[in-house]
Structures are given as structure tokens and as C-alpha cells.
Amino acid sequence: MADLIHYTAAETAEAIASGTVSAVEVAQAHLDRINAVDEKVHAFLHVDTEGALAAARAVDEKRAAGEELGPLAGVPLALKDVFTTRGVPTTAGSKMLEGWRPPYDATVTRRLKEAGVVILGKTNMDEFAMGSSTENSAYGPTGNPWDLSRIPGGSGGGSAAALAAYEAPLAIGTDTGGSIRQPGAVTGTVGVKPTYGSVSRYGLIAFSSSLDQGGPCARTVLDAALLHEAIAGHDPMDSTSINAPVPQVVAAARQADVKGMRVGVVTEFGGEGYQPGVMQRFHESVELLRSLGAEIVEISCPSFTYALPAYYLIAPSECSSNLARFDAMRYGLRVGDDGNRSAEEVTALTREAGFGPEVKRRIMLGTYALSSGYYDAYYGSAQKVRTLITRDFDRAFADVDVLISPTTPTTAFPIGERADDPMAMYLADLCTIPSNLAGNAAMSVPVGLAPEDNLPVGLQIIAPALADDRLYRVGAAVEAALNEKWGHPLLEEAPAL
Picture: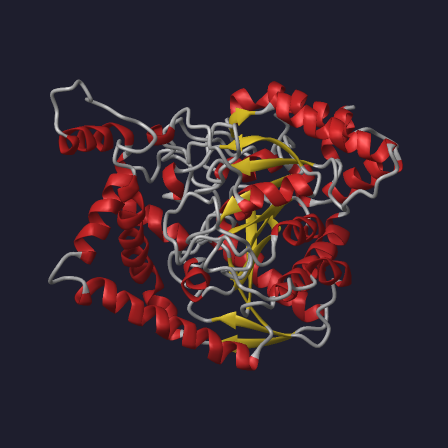
């Protein structure tokens, strides 16, 4: 049964539907893999063995009864611990929510269950999704399966690491400034940030409400597309949800053809600060797309230069507002309630104990940026920059179908290397942040290893809002061409655990 962990999600679903293997056998194989390797990787914060096997049995019973199964029925999945899951611990990587078992499912969680997807458990993450390395989790860092001494990206490093370690064929992440795409890039997996509002945020524990977006993570572009279609769609429970048809991403992934497409290379995403091996693989990807029939166009988006500072004003401002709900009065951690202290004292003691250093840093930055006398100078100015970035995207997409860039400036760096240098850490988000500020769609797809350290490199593909299908068309074409060149998928080269 060990071979089952190496199946793609599409292959797994097909095997279950045909009766070649049972959903319970598939779930057990992945639970055994988690038991064997996760002590080293620490991708999971909670493994729901009982719930996973029960969900798998339900799929097998439906198949035996002749019921029609969905395209992902019985396929195991690792769920980022920021989506509420009824009766299952949901912590958002924070001591503030340690032991909390939500009384309801997030819309994404509910849709996964309705699709027959088997949720294996909840994955590790930077606390409240604030970070670029999964080192800010209150429960310890996750290791990158390519090199356990290095970071798996953030904030969704647990989900990406679970894929790279073959603990699950599918995962869900969230992307506020790159937290799906960046972990995908440094673990050699596929990560997609759908168009903002196309996947419901109901039940997603908020960091920055105008930026947060759930999305699919997988080892192949087709698997990501199948998961994308399962979770996307309008949700009346989410006031920011787009009431529009879900783009035909699975059909686009199967098409895998870029002939006649115009692909823009963003001038501002390159130069100083980029690792040579990352740029080498990026330039090779550009030539690969040209050889596949795409027209390459140089595109300048000057406002992208200001995306990083704008993001680090907008996101902390929104987090300082969102995290005000953690006041020790309603749910979660409560410290110092001995009957003698005031509510204000209990709130202060609880926040001191419950929030980690990075969360406190961002709350303070955001509260300052929103304070009287500074709002217009900081938060207001950042929102104006956001508008300029959106206009740059609009101008670019008038000339090209998609934009491409490196996903991250470097490969995975050693755990602890940037812990005392927040600015160096924030620079990891350099290429991914503009898409979050504008709300359009973006993907990271693996394009090989950097020669100097033999670690994965990701290609970022950016498409206009509600044109998510273009990501899959380009990503699948790149994936197919590189698999043919290497004779095997990139991820098969990942070191054994």
C-alpha cells in the first residue's frame, strides 16, 4: 500500500471510483506515512485519524451502493489550521486558540466534505498567517522535506511540506501576501491564489480581510485545478464573495497549450537581491514558453516597486482591527482571571501570553498606522499605492494574457537565518504581494532546482481577475514540457525522509 502515497489526486480518485482500491486503504496509507515521517517534518498540528477513516468509509459505502462519486471523492487532504472545522482543534498556529474546537465548518471545509474529500488533519502555519517561513508558529517550525534544516515557506508551510513529504496528495492554504505561492515555490509543489472573492472566506480566521484568500495546493497542476473547482463558487455567507461562474480551470489544465498566448515578463521583478540560480531557472522558463509558441513581451509595472511597503501598512492595519476580538472575554485563552483583576487587566495579560512576537509587532505597526493624525499619512497613502498597482495590472493585461516572474527571490533559507531581521524576512514576499493588493489570480509552478544549492525554484504566473483558467493553461504547459525533459516529475527528486 506504500505506493498509494505516490499517486496523484486524479489517479487516486480514479482508482477509488473503479474499485481498484478502497478509500479506507488510501486514507490509512497516508495516515501511516504521517505517523512515519511527521515527527521530523512537523507539517501537522492535529491528525484527525478517526474523522479521516470515517469519511473514507462513507465514500466506500457510496461507491458500493452505486452512487455517483465526485472527481475527488476519497482523496486525502491536509487543511491549513486557519479554517474552522467543526469539532476539530483549530488554532491558527497560536496559543490564543489552543484547544479551541469550533462549533461550525468554514465554507471551504464544508465544500471539501461534500465533495467526499478525506481531511487528514490540520497543518502548521505562522501564527494567524503572519510570516514567510512557518517559524512564527506557537507550536514550533516546520521543516522543508528537501532539507529539514530549511524553511518550507510561509505562512502555509505545513500544507506545502505535507505535499512534498507525500503525507497528502492535496492541501489547502491561504494567501495574504504570497502564503500559498511562496511555500509552493520552495517545496517544489504547485500553489494557487485564486481571484479574490472567488473562494469563500467564511470560517477563515481573518488576518487581513481585504487580502486573505484561500486556495489549492497540490503536486500537479491538474490536481490543483480539480481542488480549485471543488472549493470555489459564490457564498452568500461571505459579503466579499463574487457571484460569478467559476472559470473552467480543469479544462484549461487538460488543454496545457500556450500557442498564440502573449506572456509578459515584468521588468521590476528582477535584478539585485535575486539568487543567480533562481534567475537562471526563470530565464530558462521564459525560453521554454517561447519554444512552446507563446509570444514574450517585456512589461514595466513601475508601481510594483512600492508594493512591499504598502502591503506592510495595509496588512498590519487590518490585523490590528481583526485581532481585537481576542480579548479573553468571549472565547480562546484567558489569563489572570483570579477575581481581583479588571477586564482590562485580564485582556492585557491574555494578549501578552497568547500572541507571539511577530503578531505583536504587526498589531503595533497597524495600530500606529491607523491612529489619529497618522491615518492619512500611512494607511491612506498605502491604499492610494494599491490603486496605482491595480492600474499597472490593468495596463499590462491590455497587452498580454498573463504575466510571469520568479515566485521568490531565493530558494528556501535555513531556519533561524532571518529570525532577527524582519526586513530580510519580508523581502521574501517581493514578487507575490502585488497580486494580493490588486486581487487578481496567481500561481506558482515548479521549474527545476537552483544549481548552487539543489533546492526547488518556482515560476509565478499572474492572470487578470476571474481569468484563473489562464494560470492552469500556462502552468500545465510548463509542467508537461519540463516533465518530458526530465523524464519524471520534479518532486520525485525530493530527498527520502
